[in-house]
Length: 381
Ligand SMILES: Cc1ncc(COP(=O)(O)O)c(C=O)c1O
Image (cartoon, rainbow, N blue to C red; front, side, top):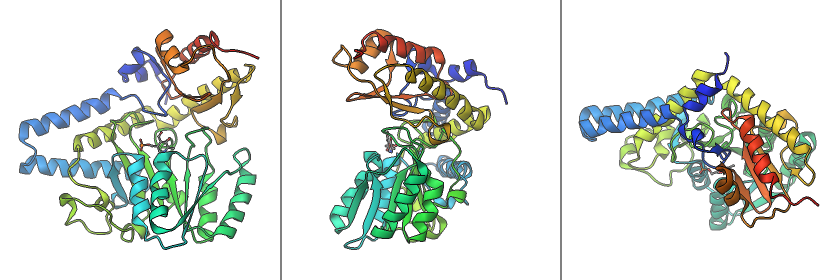
């Protein structure tokens, strides 16, 4: 399948207005996703939301989206999927769904994002469990796995939670090797897949993880406020229910959808499904390869720059399109404001760190523009 970048970019209107390098924060919405939301809203507007036809359509749309997500992430069935509003919501369902006992341990890392760990931290506080934010080795997977096994042996955590791709340094964590180790020591494994879905193929069947939380509003280009939680079949009927909604009182307890709370903007999930289909239409492996090629090229450019520390692993197998760096000093007080005002470049900047999201639609011209505009204010020692 050949990749038509110009056509791919045309389907994302925001790209014509700015250099959008911030997909790691919020992905730009694709036109097919927006059109599907609009189509479904117009349908509900015309029919009346609680009429037999519209209600049936709503249930069918939600179920189709669960099915498509199950298929794309390699889940056995849509029964293992809950539609959520975000990765954070998925992680929260798990955090509050485990029957924590005093002294239970949770193992996670210092790389995690609030969305993945905060609910776990709160649950640990409430139930007298312990959470260990491990400053794990991230420069060598073999060393990580060895240290991970030692941690498991020593701490015997009940749950391990790691990101598939870390938010702070764009490291693609060796989840596939970590899950069996965690299981060997009796721990459940939750994956924060906020930066995985839409970047590379996820296969929960092969991973055998227990939970995986992702979203539609980053790399998928879906509507904001869309996400999903995968719950392994053997756990779907066991995870405790913390909140509920009238729609789901008759739902069987072993269906993931039982964790979906109350009335929601169901059109958005149709939009999320359209976003997945849109990417599939272009070939997801093709999109992944395109993003990775450009991210590697960008990292090579950064390597030539004095004073820049690349935080993301250089090896393609240990990284994705998310590139984080430490940039040292600049002569402007607010770098992200400067980049926007000067050249309409959107990147994530925090402290002296910058995170550049290279997606399949990102061009080398955009990355060159960033280097050029930022280069004008860089202070090089
Ligand atoms: C690794 C990671 N997990 C979770 C989140 C939160 O995602 P959401 O807004 O879908 O809850 C983010 C957001 O950037 C993230 O980087």
